[in-house]
Image (cartoon, rainbow, N blue to C red; front, side, top):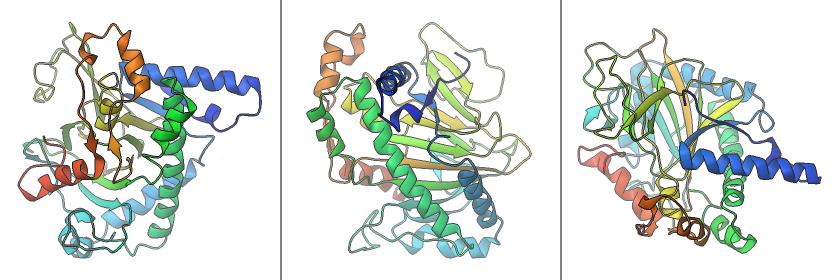
Length: 347
């Protein structure tokens, strides 16, 4: 329980033999178990992308964050739709407290941009040489990866071909989000976290981070298990019993977690998991999360395959019917929290 499971993406990249199918089935089953028991896992993507590629993105991110503040402010969120662009250190808020990080946010481009409408502006790209080109290339690869993982998850839920086809139609034009985040060391007197505890509200998160250890922490809900408090950190999990574990980077892997849309799709069988960043090291940490989300107009509702599993599940808390949502409306409400003093991860 001290570490997250590792799922290799390789079996989902080929279907040439029965052996491939067997490996695919085993990996789909492992993916299902990871979603039920953790909500977080490592995804080994070494067979999908060259490890040097995300390392190059980290280098480009450092070049941007090292620019003078006035240069970074030229890409300020206020220039566009208050969602796309640069947020200064402590400008992002989680659980009512300023987060000790700065970041660049990008969203799927839209037709007929109008920066007066929430989420409907244009992305603001740094002038750092190679930044826009290489990050756009990463976006395209992560969109492909998103569909690969979605199909693997459909296999794990034993969805029929028609059921998978319907689910795919809800994510085949993903309203993706990408953040490039810089974390200076957390000051001892800072009243908050590098990033406060939250659950992702979308579909799938693929996180590449530099090698900094002991920064990303994941809360594993385990009834009856209470972690002894060995630090001055507040109990952001409230009264829920369980433990916080580190999700340190593993070479060749991204950290993957599921968002609230999967809670709805599985009617509570899968759960989005609390996580936070507490960077007390001496270095400047960089992370690049890519959020593979449903289509903007997708109607997200419990899946028939999940209902079949829930009908014979020992979990008594999956009987509650989850309400359907239109993803775009849900997203606008979340991001709109940034305008009224709350954070986009707040309820």
